[in-house]
Length: 345
Ligand code: TRP
Image 1 (cartoon, helix red, strand yellow):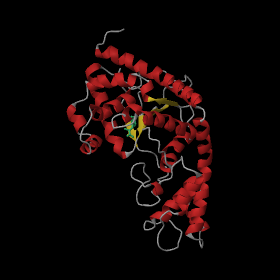
Image 2 (tube, helix red, strand yellow; image 1 turned 60 degrees about the horizontal axis):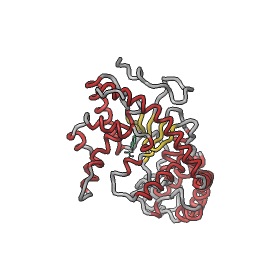
Image 3 (cartoon, helix red, strand yellow; image 1 turned 90 degrees about the vertical axis):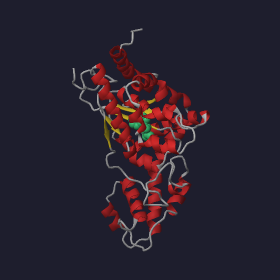
Image 4 (tube, helix red, strand yellow; image 1 turned 90 degrees about the horizontal axis):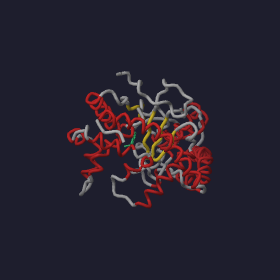
């Protein structure tokens, strides 16, 4: 024992060997998927899709903040449709809804008995969120343990997260290590991977800040769900800089962002674009960016519309994903139950 991979369950599809790196991504079900999410995350995940990548829509995590039940249900399906529309292929990856695999909540309880109040109290996200609220649910406090269960159930090697989630992945490692020390080698130890350099999309109105679900104004972010006309208008009204020169530079964040968007959506190099736009004006650049962004989003938006019109198909794909996930998660839970002294049922 002790070899991290020794207890790894068979690859889900049976087609892949054990040396494969297993990746787990948790995605919050927010309806507002924007261009930054697409170019920086979803779209790239889809293009670089590898087997053994689990995509989990974390509806149980979404319940830790006040919410409206019909809206939650709607958003979960919505984000699933965007992931599928972006090209996440259920024949390659495993896409599923967290609450469909009951092992997540079961594992959370057992990990609750390993995690400590002290370490959870030190979580920055908890401290920040709880400071903004009058009443703090136990669920909010326990959020990172549910996240640890998500990751550990699948023996994930890599967890691609933003900087704000690194602490939760570190905690997951700590919990796994403590569990293994107490009950015997059970969980693989995951590591956080910062997203590989993808497009960094900045807010169109405040180009020194990232395009963000929560912070950007409606004019500052391009939603995948909006029409081409609205996308075009937002890009035409993007903040640029005084001066007229089209080049990427630190003191030209607006123009740099537009060049980045054009590079990300056409595959051209920035330097090449700077040459191409010599003598042209900001309006020319914006028109081309709008066309290029809309061109890239067009098939995604079309596919999304088709999926939204076919809820039965989406439900079937999600059921299939849950089935594949459960196969892995239930084996892990068998191991956990056995190690922790629960009587076999
Ligand atoms: N907490 C993550 C976020 O806010 C979402 C998440 C839940 C997650 N479970 C996960 C991310 C497991 C990675 C792995 O973005």
